[in-house]
Length: 195
Image (cartoon, rainbow, N blue to C red; front, side):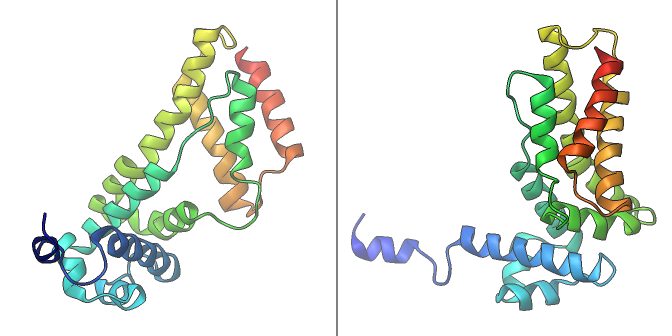
């Protein structure tokens, strides 16, 4: 491709990926500060330093933009696979050691209360963020069953609820991180019950 043709092929401004990253980061910030009710495309555009039209070209509604953010957060989340359930769970809990909320937690907290009254938002939150994380943690237990670490009759759905209940209770209700002592106590009870 000649220099002239390559110049014509490129559009002016920031590359699309860089602009998208900035818009998604601004979306997380605005949601965390204002919740879904106070969340507007105008505020995101101002925070990201882009025109409203730039956002509307990619996402036609504020819900579409929130779904894009949830998908981005989903991609960024991965559970450990160390070859042993206990170390997998310790690795998962290590993410939550800090008492400073992660971006995903801040977004989840901002959307959770609104989701009770907004069925579309509730479904998006469940489908794009909660369900994929639940599936990933379920995979930890499925691998543990396959390795013979956990009884085959264990109700994985229930155990996943217990694990996330522990995480959310520590993070959102008690507003604490998950330190080594808390993880040790929880794992002793959990693993004793499912082995």
